[in-house]
Image (tube, rainbow, N blue to C red; front, side, top):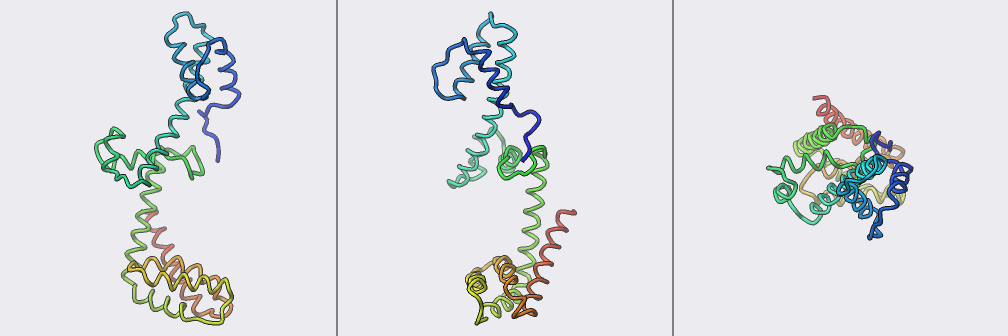
Length: 221
């Protein structure tokens, strides 16, 4: 993961703190210390130009730190069961769509290239969801085929331990009302079936290829 061009470096932060070392702070927490130092400069008309520049450097670091807090808090709220509708007022936005959009724009965890814009991440997430909806719709339209194929896989015997574990996952997925739940376990099982059951593995691979085409088609749109 590459560092963004505007990220504050450790050397910059250290130099800024050294410049402001004469200004006492009462908190042991680095973020609170930086906030105290910045506040002391903004309220002090006698600050030197060097101190003002140092305060600006620390302020940039504070912005970067605070920017990581909001998506974490939103994620914690979502994991705790808070809806986007409830989150919207806390985030200062008017709708659930705007709340989710803000989260996607701010989130950096799991993002490989931080130079991608927030809007690019929003579009990528929308594309991913559209692709999954298309795959789910296709799976439910072809439920008979998927469940028949899964039943044949679940009935196999004489398999290795690894293959048996994958087949058990297929059997478990057969209990789901959503036929798209079968796609992942079937694809995983296929890797163990090419040797002893090439025909069955080929049918699974054909389905896996079809679902990949559906996702790619959504991205292309």
